[in-house]
Image (tube, rainbow, N blue to C red; front, side, top):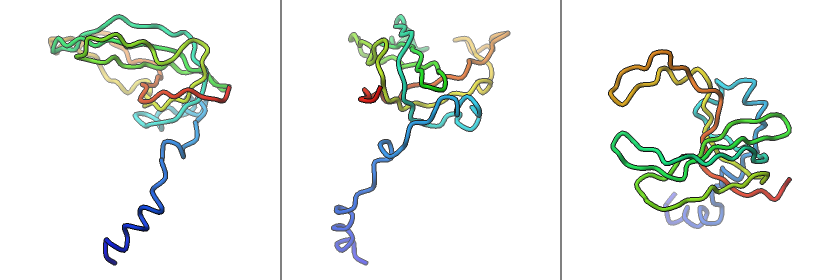
Length: 148
């Protein structure tokens, strides 16, 4: 079949948007089996609590990163800590995309506890007694939710 014959079909029936088609997963489901979700994208729905804006931080190259913040996302089954990474190399103020008590849809990458190995200093030496972080999510996309 020729591409010219397939093109009208592709235009009439585009692929569905996977991010919209996915349903939010409950936080308790992730907590029950965090290894299954480690480094996987998930959609979460919940209310923002404990918003904490972080000070600028620096990459090993010396580049400043600003606008990072943390918050807790809570749904009816549990809660998870969420990190929003800063913007690096651009000296502009960036306020948090969320506010206390707001309900959001969150696309995030899950980081399971015990999967981080050791932490290293800027000199490349392994830090003694470094422990792995608890279960948390790193935000990729935040959208306001109409649902409470």
